[in-house]
Length: 354
Image (cartoon, rainbow, N blue to C red; front, side, top):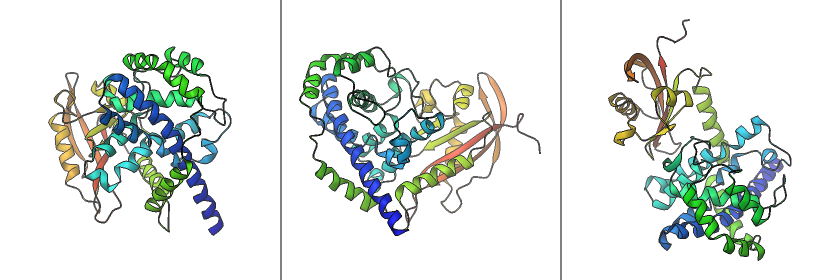
């Protein structure tokens, strides 16, 4: 048992170090893109540093999926996609995140949204256009370029020219047109860096030290941090039923966003599945949403569920009666910290009769 635990720790070290190496490559290009966009050096440095951690959530993914030489199945790809939210959750749970430190919040945005696409076809939240933070947009483009020009267990590295062609032609998803112009403008310089074989020159010893610090901070004698993340994700899945004909939501108290199920966003008439309840144009259910969030904030870690209640909600000029079931989410700290909530909003007219 002890030997198996040691092997798992070794694999975690290896996976984390590899993700940091990839993160360094991506952050270098992200810095160049941000400079080309016209941002000050200090902001570009901050974005680059935060970008190093963009794929940190992959330490929660099974190595058999991460290192699979062939194409992922639909089920495996669904698991792979959870790394974005998992990485963001890791950063959100850091004590420094509660202190509203700018760098950690930028890193959170990048972790969660670096797989979003400009046309809304990305994940995990289906953000579209300028709803995607510019930091995540920049890292997303840099991430794709690095993935194309790097050798992977499932593919050989593409040339700079081929990679640029694939990106510009939209074969890797839609990106901000302005960012694509910036990429073309610095094309010759990044091609030169690629020819110089800068990949692999990153100080692996330094990154191994960083890896050890993260592991020592995040793993207890009883269980790994990744296991805790998986347990939290399982708790969410158990809470949500399989009935998709209802409005399902997740409230993030740290960045004050509400993520709606696809059905819920469409039903309520929102263009994006992620809304900002405190911005006037994106109020979440108006006064009803404010009442719900207030109820959730009055819960405790020991008693996280609110008492289910019914209320009238109006959308598209139609008023219907809905039942609201929700619970708050808390960290495992002592004392626990409130981080958000999960909930279901059910049309009582379509609720199943027992």
